[in-house]
Image (cartoon, rainbow, N blue to C red; front, side, top):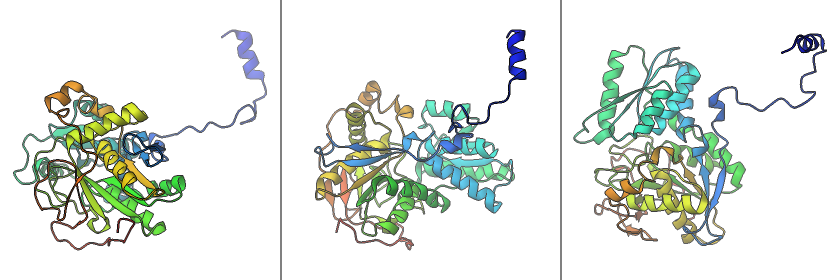
Length: 383
């Protein structure tokens, strides 16, 4: 810079703030990017034009829907004194919550250890490491509780050796439910009215938290849960599961069984078909839970009377699934292209009537463990 220009800059009268342009609306921390996600209308091929559903695109958050719960659980733990400044965070995750906890760790200054298993995509391992988290992988599933129980057991071991560390325990922590109240209020502002909500179920957090708040405004709203074949959550026998992000080999306490009007189970080949259709037709895509939810939400849009407003929650984006859901070779090796999904689900009267292997729905929803429910069923448009 020339000396004459430097002299001019030093001698010039300072310009009043905002005189030339408004103060930029720039996030000061990445956590401020969480929330206020968009809604996209989805119709064909899931439902005829005009009879589609509104998809809440939680993949627009930095790491996905669980950014909301991770930040809230850590913030509340710090407020209560359960997590002291600088102490470690240790948690089990199949991926999305891990990304959220990495964000929370950066935001509040805590080292993060994520316990996962060999099913965690290498891309997510690299992302977590890049974000500063440590990834600890178990090598063998628990004989009854599968990979999830094995991960939880490993978390217990690590907490014993890391004094002062904290586990948010997404499966049982009520903060995982209350974290989703803002998502519900966003939906109310965006859609005005919601008659049917379709949500994937894994830990049970977002289905319970969003439906609880929505029913304060729309008491007759129906809640449809979406599970994976091979998941034990709603009474099916636990089995091997290719899909991650929904379903469980255990029975999380946060699942609000009494809030559901019905449950659908979706198989991997059906979720892949739906994911590919979303990408091709709507430039919107995500992982297993997104595909499964889209399939069921499309059914709801067709099954209920015209004018019924159906909202669906898409928990994440496509990036961690590029080597699986969106990889033709991988899908071919797992025989996910061998058959097209039916456009209507099978129906069973009881959730444990028989072991299901493809898209199936059931109107009877109960806790397989018989635990008392604090969230009671509300008569909705399904009845």
